[in-house]
Image 1 (cartoon, rainbow, N blue to C red):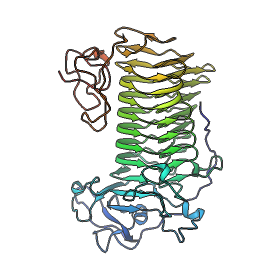
Image 2 (cartoon, rainbow, N blue to C red):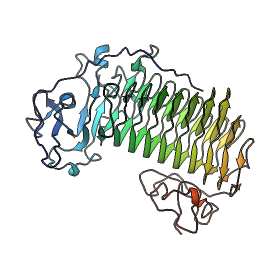
Image 3 (cartoon, rainbow, N blue to C red):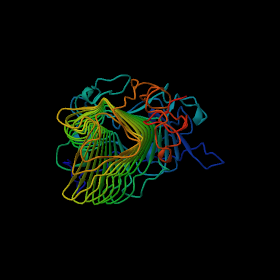
Image 4 (cartoon, one colour):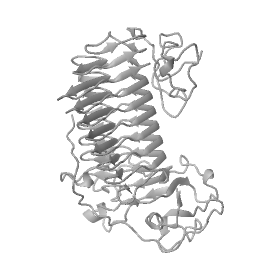
Length: 500
């Protein structure tokens, strides 16, 4: 189910933009790139040409169009220095870091580098924080969990404005941690109730930036998109995320970590090498909610892990809802474990009112997920002439559970198709289990751990039934760890290919 509809009226105003004055220096004569250096205590009068006296503050660097590449020194950046931390005003909470142009933003510098590749975002974290009243429970400046928020934080930490002129892959964010955003304005459909960490606004325009090596932790929203809200209303908001972590974020309604809104538009992000862990939503999509009304919201997920996410109702990890539109994600080399919800412990698919939700699920592993009601791993439903016909190929569904029915898969006016898959408990009602499907053949999965690659996985036993039992025509070129497929006579079933 989905309780969200699109806000038609924007009530927010941009009060936090600071105009830069000097043109940045440090131009790369080969590319024309102008590098501007940014530090936490930088000034609005600097030109960004060095790490010392000319270093800029972040607002000035973002607004200075001469700066095409920003280098951010490690530290904790906050959208505003409030006048009184005990009495933060609404206008102070509305301050945020605004990106509204093609610019490359890199974090992870220690303040001595002369080359971009010399930075290290792990050793030198660059943190954008909404803890403007300085009272969250933090670990080295990071609000690790939404429950650690205290007081009156920023409504949004980061605002990507693609509604005015459009943002594309030339807008790049790399090596940043976004934390402590609190979009808690309960007034219906105010933007301050969505996307506590990042609001990607593509309403009537385009918000398709590229984000890599980013961390979203400890953000919250009273409505949807605790960490990220992608607003593709009457436009498009389909950012790409590569090598990203979403942890400890929460939403009162849908999309504990991410909400993709394709209302009369498109919101279909691409997620590669991404981990969603311990996010939660009050209603649906504990980690991610993809929703569309008369549009499309069909994300692409490659090498992604969902672990220990929770939804109060539908889709403990992922909820896909197509209302008079299409919400049919493509999942390849994905692991779901430890997720929980009412219907669809891991994944919930709903096509409604002539809408469609028919994901393509290829080489995916489901194990240890739980539904209080139905569909421990996957629940699919077609309502009011809607359609849900998920296609599962080379998939492991094992050791999931449900309180009422369908420990692995449950369907209501829906027909999933399974082939070359391992399915515990036999073929469920309304499903079609075709060629190569193995029923009650224990794959002997290992625990969730680092098996290589950028995301943790669950490897099947080398002598188990998953090995060399998949469909080669549907086999991806590599597995979730990055290992080439196949390693044996044929593709292995599940997210991990086993070495012979």
